[in-house]
Image 1: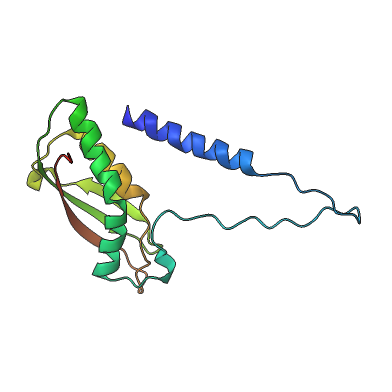
Image 2: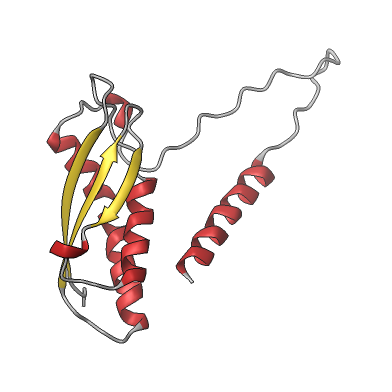
Length: 150
């Protein structure tokens, strides 16, 4: 269900972007005006201006924390459960600041729901971080303590 919802959101975003592009109108001289697309609005902190530090990694994750909480709320509500717990995650930030190999470490996590894990992995995989200055992949371990918000 989450994958279908995520696919629908991505598809709706692509359609909205396509519909928002207006054709260029010709000015009085008859030649079409050169169009420069507006810069894409980034979701989250401006990672291009941030140094690669533990604090900047924490800032990016905290910005996306609400999406992780939504995963928890959605998947626990489906099962009519309000179990509190911890998810230990690992992921790698590559030379471009993109996430690869996002995983939930099942052995050290107390929330064992596979669909919750899939949702959290999808959120982690969508994050963008500052680029490591030396251009090497950086492994990260990050815990999430989750509980129902009343």
